[in-house]
View 1 (cartoon, one colour):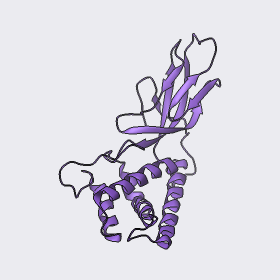
View 2 (cartoon, rainbow, N blue to C red):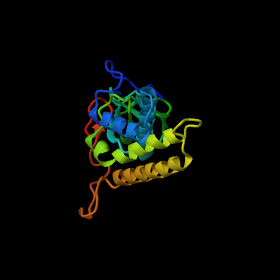
View 3 (cartoon, one colour):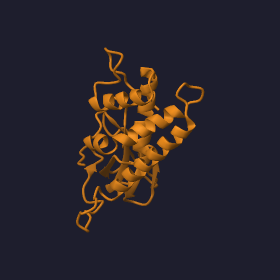
View 4 (tube, helix red, strand yellow):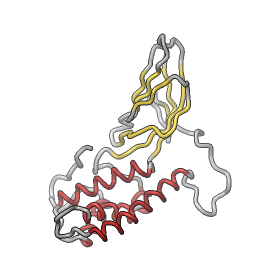
Amino acid sequence: MSSPAICEGNPAFLSDKPDVERLYDNIQVMIPGLTTDMTTLVIWNTIEDFFQRSTIRREHVYWHMAPGVVRLQFDPYDKDWRVFRFLGYQGPNNVKLTPPGELLDLTHPTPDNDRNGEVILGLKPRNLQVQLPYNIWTLWFETLLAGACYRLYMQPAKPYTDVNMARLQASMYRAGIASARALVQSGNVTDGAPSWRFPYFAAGGHADGSRRG
């Protein structure tokens, strides 16, 4: 796990992101007296865990291997986002997918032809400074707050240790993760939407350089 980046300057602030500051303020109100370092740690751990468990940030990528190429590396996805695992694959059968994001063609001898396929990548932010999508803070703010609080309440021998509150917050956090995962698996289609769904492998990007979301 990488360390969260701390905004230089005023030590009372975790970053230059107002949504992160809102999360910080809410935690401080619920559990007064926390240090900035401790609050930073639990916020980052919660955000990273939320993305990994919910798989809410998924990217569909078309990949291409030229003749003689047997290895593709999808991680990091870009300067802000890391791949943590493959969520889907289409293409030749004789391949090995190695977490977090390596695709290896095991064909022997080395193929002298072009190969193409598609993958779904599960992504997580690189650090606390990454600007998260708008929907994370509008739909899942309470989930992130619950996740941070449950981690704090579970810490042993602290003034704020509270096993009962930890269980309550953990239950809320897990329910939020389940809802986020279900929403992304449905293609972000909610009640009142048409019954048809856009094909999952209908749009994407290219592993040889270009991507589209």
